[in-house]
Amino acid sequence: SSELTQDPAVSVALGQTVRITCHGDSLRLFYASWYQQKPGQAPILVIFGENSRPSGIPDRFSGSISGYTASLTITGAQAEDEADYYCNSRDSSGVGVFGGGTKVTVL
Amino acid sequence: QVQLQESGPGLVKPSQTLSLTCTVSGGSISGRDDYWSWIRQAPGKGLEWIGYIYSSGSAYYNPSLGSRLTISLDTSKNQFSLKLTSVTAADTAVYYCAKYYYDGTGLNWFDPWGQGTLVTVSS
Image 1 (cartoon, rainbow over the protein chains, first blue to last red):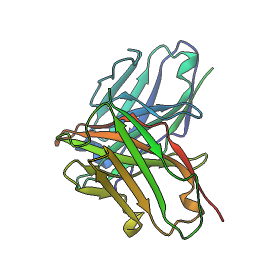
Image 2: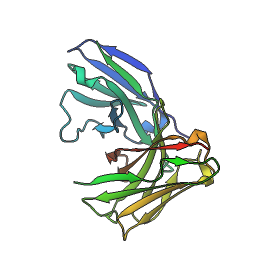
Image 3: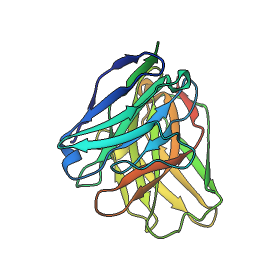
Image 4: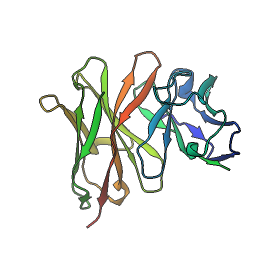
């Protein structure tokens, strides 16, 4: 089965830029999507495709892909961006997978 | 816009069957190219993909859940359901339903999500 690997935690100073990565073989064939989850809340979609944002998601969130790695970048991180972030994709047989999640702390 | 709401028992005894329903409002679950999915999150853990069902009725399941899992559609009620048999404490989690989009080439995502419902497996 496919796997997606994320760093467990990253920290960023208020107003600075942070990149979260997601690595997996399936990303050569399928795009990743990214989700933000705050404590006690359901996840919300923040990035899909190479770099598309649903309506209502601030433009400081952006995505990119290079080879087997997808990245989520927060440019000018705000206090409200402190959350867990998960990547997701699928494999050719239709099986889905989430990365282990990255806890983002805004200092 | 489409909204999803999970419902079902919050407590299930070990070895019994966990049954949850997701009610979809603001859109039909019979729409072409629509997938309807379940995702869970054990306390303090990450998200785990459970499976999804296509509007045609074809279902895809997490291999780790094997034959214990069934996802089905009820188009008359605009609902889809999850049944997980022979549950253990390891199945204790918040269960989310979500709409899944897949374009057939590579683009895929989950949106929107329900608020989630906690299911505890305990005697």
